[in-house]
Length: 251
Image (cartoon, rainbow, N blue to C red; front, side):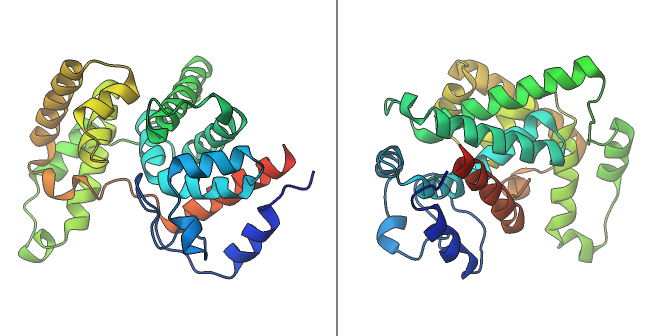
């Protein structure tokens, strides 16, 4: 089936370089659309136009929300290959049910719930089949790394601490890990985190407090590098977006 707008978007995308994605409220300069008037559209405007037949504009929504949704999926399945599958299926589910989205909540919250459902279902299947792969380091490995006293040169290299933090986050229980990723890594408010996870504000606060305490015991200071953890780089962003657009074109 020929999909209106997809061919044009694909031609434009192939003629441009990529930069990492933006965040929820506005597209980044690397969003992939040359028309700045299109890039300035709100999520609600884009949804209306996609529903009206401009399916190619769904790319704009993916690039706005890719980073948060990747981090959310990654906090559950903890497997890089599986994460991309979760994102692709979640976006396809969202596209096919876009008429069910109601503006009473933010689109980012709605998408996050879809990703959580998809990732959780895959994790349950993996546990049943015994195929689950956990990427986090052991407690002994994490403790050894945390206890290492790096040289001044290494102290200045924040990437080492960031990798250590990511391994420590992977070792958290899932409920704490999700809250920490959404609150301290992605920077959501307590209320939006609670809404995304279907929890109360007090539960989110309690889990975040406990997650931070666990992490500090393993890595010490965490605030300076948390926001840079689990980045979704441009090549993976492009791969995910292109795969989903291909699925949409065949739907």
